Amino acid sequence: LLSHDGKLRTIDIANPENPTLIHTLEGLGNPWAIIVEGDYAYVADNTQGVVAISLETPSAPMLLSSTPTIGGAQDITYQDGFLYTAGGSAGIEVFNLDTPAAPVSVAELELGGAVISVSANNNLLWATNQESVLVVDITDPARPVQLASEDTASWAMHTVALGATAYVADWRSLA
Image (cartoon, rainbow, N blue to C red):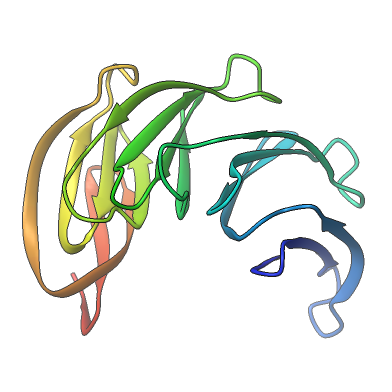
């Protein structure tokens, strides 16, 4: 569980009726989103960038590295050895995970507007920028190519990719 006070809290939910805090990791800046991939967690931190965390001991996660991003990281997604971050007005940044403890930036893509949410699946990266939902071809992650965009009725706040479909949480509806 992330909180904007710079902490990652690990909660044991073996008994859903009685969740128990088992660890608090400090040292994050302003974390917004977290994903888990294998023995690592990656945090989109608005002030520190991409933060890699070891989950080798799940009950006591450990900070490994912070990699600056082109903009304040607000969301993060994973596909096939690469991380994709939503970097606000700077756009999207792609990170290679050949060394999982130390992500390396390999591409940037400016999409217009402030990109606040990203989700990847089937070599497609979906993004929202409060005005639109955008789709990017990530067949070659080092060379992402925007395919299309579509304005939404209100404020496109979040997206989740399932197969070749994206679900978008617009301010007043789900599309």
